[in-house]
Image 1 (cartoon, rainbow, N blue to C red):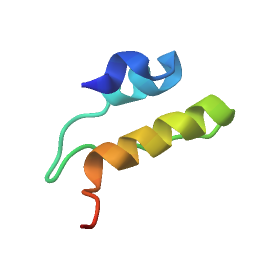
Image 2 (image 1 turned 180 degrees about the vertical axis):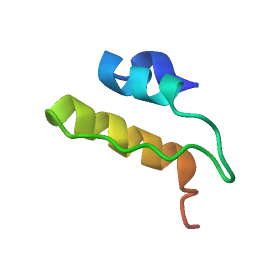
Image 3 (image 1 turned 135 degrees about the vertical axis):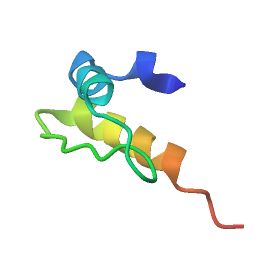
Length: 51
């Protein structure tokens, strides 16, 4: 997975959040633009593109 490419903040949140029905529910505080980039990457992994 791309976890190693995320900011240390998002990596830590992901590792601390337990798996639940359908995946992980992360509450991410946007501290700077790099966190927004991480969020966009996480969404892209989860959402399948329309064809």
